[in-house]
Amino acid sequence: MKKIFISAIMICFSVSGFAQAGLSASDESQHIKLKQEYTPQSVIMIGTSLNSSQNACTLMYGYVKKWGWYGKLKTNFNLNEDYSYETSDNSNAFWNGKVKKGRYSATIGTIFNMNGSLMAYGGLGYGKRWVEWGTVENQNIKRTDYSYKGIESEVGLLLSVKKFVISGGISTNLNKTSHSEANIAVGLKF
Image: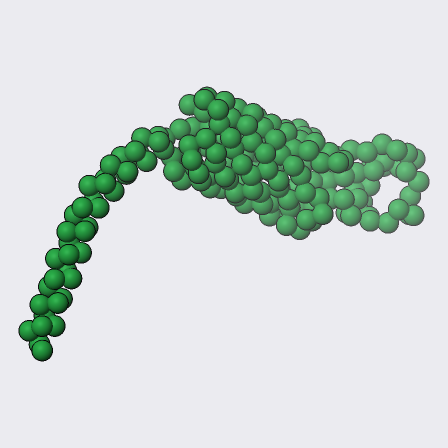
């Protein structure tokens, strides 16, 4: 019985060895094809984030093969806060109708190349948005109900056609998820 068991194990190993040897040649040719399909490439894009009350410009750079990384900056170029005090109450001042808004963020993340022309990305970073309302006394009051700062998250897709790339995604600040932004961009891969 012991000899039969040992013989059966040896037959299994030799059959699986032949099967692996037969598969390894085709696996190797498939691996070479995949390697050729996912050549390293850089992506640079400019775009905008769209929010119902505020837009910002974006600049993104990434490097990808099958997996890669990216970094993205977003701003509306208004980086100076200038307010007398903060409030979320509409009744404690007479508003003059002037509104000042600022927005910036920086995120880093991962790009996954799904099939050579379609890629998915996702990342985390830090972002800040502030809204100031002017009063009839010429003071700026920071509206805390519309302002936020903290961890930013984003996800999206990149579609490349030859050397051109377009992207669409969504980002939000985890401290104020009701203020999500759609992101669109165009760029080049090289």
